[in-house]
Image (cartoon, rainbow, N blue to C red; front, side):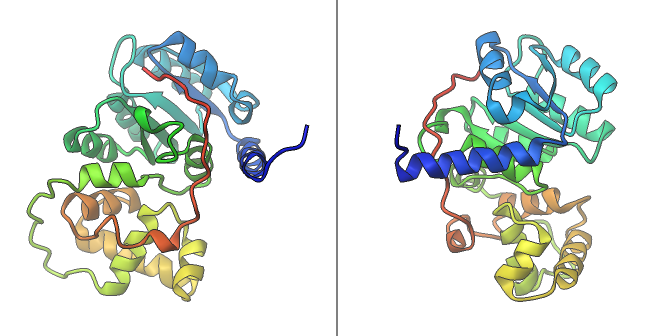
Length: 252
């Protein structure tokens, strides 16, 4: 059977994701057991799976025992709350990466998930539409980036709150770096996009975190989106074209 170009692109993305997850440990949590099975059997995940759970307590127990590198969870669980799960595990293991699927698409819930420390946020309704790509989300978050697709950015920026007074406002270059972080870029990728050194990027990130009074680069991105410091429509040209993932999975 001959693959068309989009099939080849998807296969290449899946292969890249599989290689990236090869030395990672993945924990999957979902309310729906059929969804859990579908996620577990996803080729890039299967090789790295250390456990699957349907409740918050089960996931925390597995996480304590297996020390996963990546958590994939839905917002709704059989018992418990996915966003609280992300927050709890991230507090225990700050280096863990977390990808969450949200049923509710309100600014409040999106902001809650981001502030909990989610490295990747997707709406379940976006899977298979091209407005949020599961393979790309896996690749980006597992690789140390942030995955907030356009639909998520638009949701959290719909009702921006008045920004707290910042004694030392971010420079234009620091804002550019924050925009790139929101796009899922890592320091080296930001350096290449902005034609500066990786060390300079690191310095800008550190300065921005200090100025905003947040704990890390994720919280800096959340702050910028929440308080309207960046416009989610202004920087599409710095990120790759999303890879469409047409297999629809019902999450919940």
